[in-house]
Image 1: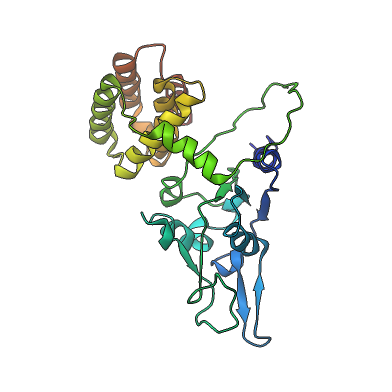
Image 2 (image 1 turned 180 degrees about the horizontal axis):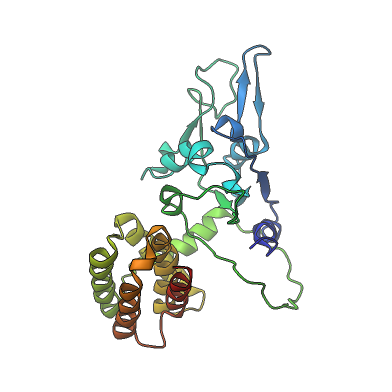
Length: 290
């Protein structure tokens, strides 16, 4: 929904960490990475950089957490202007996360512009906001599979939050917390066995497979979600909904209502009738839309 505070939420997080969030308003005509990071002008012999490129370069010199919001990211095709970022950030070695800036290097190039490339630092996070309406493009699986979605589909109740002081938190500190929580984590035997059966059912009935990337994300996400006060099943429920069931929106669900009912029964049998409420609510919405 529009106006629910998607951009404000990401902006507030940057404020909380004492490092202002960079908001990049996406333009409908954007088609390539130069729209996002800038371009070299052959006539003036100068590079016209954007705020994002400036912040990417700055982040490489500090230990702060940098938040970049791609605001209304689906006003243009994400897989066009953000394609190089999507590909590079899949590389297992973070030292290879380099983006082409200029075709050739010169002696007067900035220190961290090496062979015409700049490194995407680990301490910069990308947050995209998107609305679903007639003025926007569909976000493809290539994009969704590399991200974790937060759906804000209804207006929240008012919260009278107490004033909270800002904190100075380095990326290393935050990342170390994540790694300590994730270290040695394994899904419980019940959850692992149940998810394998769920995977087989979804492949057979809906012709959709989880893939190794999604299973890796689940093993990284669930322990952190649990450390925030939720249960293992709640973490799995969230990931099942927004990483797997979301793919069902592209199916012809008119002919799959029986299979959707069977999926709900399977969730009840595997995890219990009072579990996986987010997934069941999402399936109910799919049936209504079919």
